Image (cartoon, rainbow, N blue to C red; front, side, top):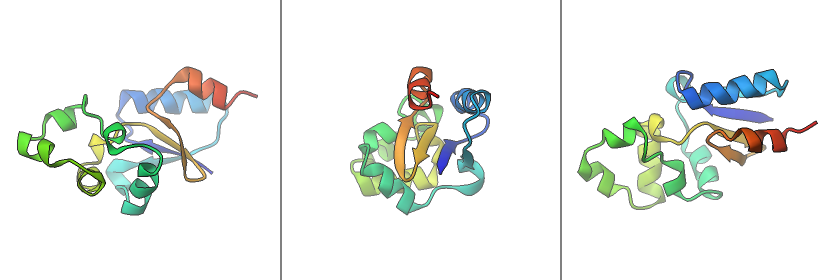
Length: 117
């Protein structure tokens, strides 16, 4: 089962969804804004990527945090709590197949290679 995690109004998520749709790749969309994200899912991702890669430090959500909050994110538990509280801080989209993160962010070449006929 293929799941694309993100928020619908994110331009990068829109590009990924358009690419998947145009290439006939079936997937389920998980909307962070409507459905949130559970701790178990984040823990699974953290076995594959360090928290520093999962948090989008270039995004508006991260930049809008106060310095005390930013400096308090130092390990998996603090990063997990932040990602659950502010799902927009997660780098997106996250493309997952059978609990394995295939792609973090959207890379058309990677998608093409992964889903080539």
